[in-house]
Length: 134
Image 1 (cartoon, rainbow, N blue to C red):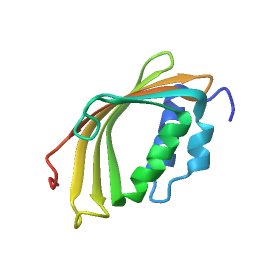
Image 2: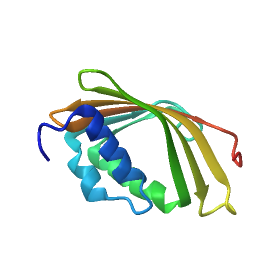
Image 3: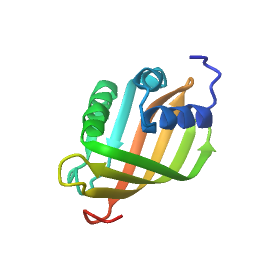
Image 4: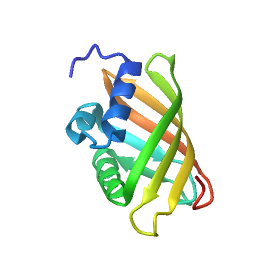
């Protein structure tokens, strides 16, 4: 990856690589710094929150995708707020493989830090609707 990748473009490319119908894990991996830190604030599925390194985040993403019959991310806003800082507001909707097609839906605020063209930190706030909301 070129070191000249601007933060907004790096985050857009990461979102595209990870939310595609057929996610591109190689492309996503190339956009993540080796020392990535992913912070998930407490929510319905992680009551105490979670902090993951790069490999744990990639593994969790793989496992999460395997639980979904389908998923969709609607990006409402994406903006670079300061040098290397990008904020995203989105809605996630996914249908579980198990659970007879139960729909998960969440409003998401995510804050990305980009260093030398790679995402080095992701901090997420996921507000889930009651199960089955669509």
